[in-house]
Length: 610
Image (cartoon, rainbow, N blue to C red; front, side, top):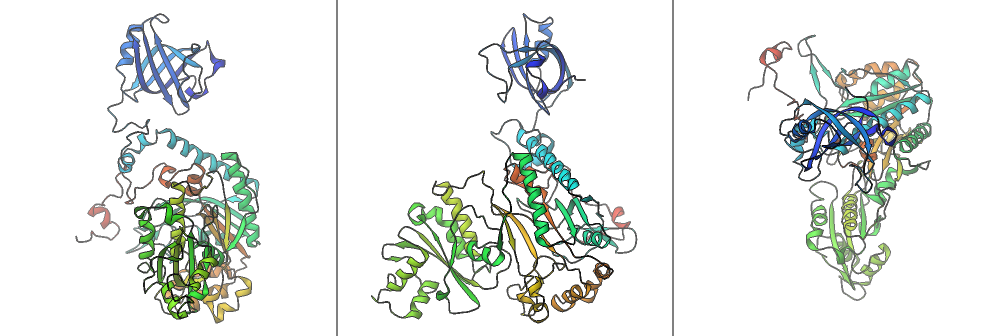
């Protein structure tokens, strides 16, 4: 039907007769003898020209063109010609040619569109666009995103093949095991109540592949989690999954650094410096209040032990330079709310915000940590609790001056892998300062970072002292030096886990795995205190570890998130062809849909009573 695509035609084709197919847009009737139409296909655009003096049958052509609705699919034939000197370039600024049309045929006439996908102005709400995703995908930016995703995936596959990794598919129908997130269950007709589960990751399968003797495995793997959604989460997602035998964490990190270099060079033409910076979990949470810190800017948190006499708590201060003077009360409201709500969310015991003024600070209510500290210390030298010498000395220590904002927080010394209150405030304050031109964060700066030495186990707030959960998953090996603590004080054990972080976004995480069956059983039974039936659900893995499984480790990178960063997309939904809405529904396919009573009966199920 076509000899060329719109994107491949150039000056070398001038004088040639070609056939094109595409969607007609931007009809312009300049006179009774001159008509222009923009033709778009998957590869580019071409301006079509119908001119009375240059082709026969102009009247019929003009009649056909004038009746074209936007995005009607047409086939055209004509001759490639140069555009007149001084004429504007074609759409995208890349063409000095156009097509002199002598034949037009309608392939599929478009009915009125729910929205125009070719303009960024007045786009409808996202739910409307998701309901007509095939139209939304015609937008140039989404076309670009999906093509970049394809290019990135191909670059990853090429790199993995060249480095000796074997692409192995693992099952999508698995069984339910308690690894953290809620799973999707798939009922079967095998037996009453029998269900598969969709895998949250290929974690157990790839460990079994190491036991099977495949030294280097990888997979572009589909994963499923039945969780609440947000901009960076989907119920089904894709990860770059890999596992290696006879390695230490440095070996895995080196491979990932080389992979990132290859992808960034292929897609963005940018050279990424390696090795990436390393930072412990303790340092990341102490300095930046996050286990995935954005290190492109300062605003570092300062620990101030003298403010809190309790050894189980940490007192810390964040100074936001110039914010008190530059930001209005309305602009400060989100920061105020974050400080006020910190106790309710369990992020801190108390957090307060103060404006630093000449000679003192505002907001020294009795319950604030600063006021309690001053009261414990007794009267200041000049007997002025809001501007005493002790307070002045503290402000000097943390580098605060008049016009700054001062956030003071008291939190538990036991930090779970998440943002602290001051970590959240730091991110919010940076965004505000950027908007006011007081903080410059280059968009083309890529600060890759390895965050390591996470606590192997976590004690949730309010849980009994002996109740621990796996910080990441129960298969992570302890740091070798901490192995004795696994049997005496497991809460102090650090794990051989490592997260890859870029500009405040977690790209992925991995670990060296437990390969000793006795250690794995001890973690299940004595540390996590799993019920016997839950322990039994991991019996296949423990058996494989005991049959000559080599030391091994791996990592999984979020492909959706990786592509979102490569394309500067604010949401994962912008880099997935057919994503779910924030509600978890597929609005274009109207899924999930209720099953009929007969369908449920085949699985031994019946509808729940409303």
